[in-house]
Image 1: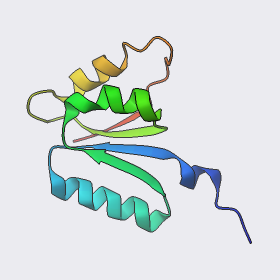
Image 2: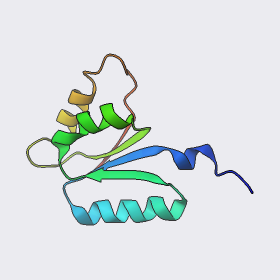
Image 3: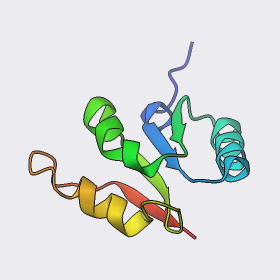
Image 4: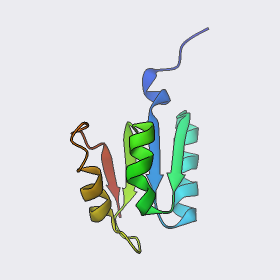
Length: 91
């Protein structure tokens, strides 16, 4: 039995206010073999989710209501214990 490459076990968070975009990204990641994919449409939850799950990668929409992607990154950047910010920005 072969082991899955470690990268496929990476914890990934998708943050987008559009459910269709989340569905598309989930499908693409699933087809690529990624197993641990979470999502939220609420950018205000990202900091708490990242503290709880320590995501290896966050896929972040920039243009969202209430809190845009730049504000989310600023909130994530306040965590001094984890200076690495694993974010890919989507527009």
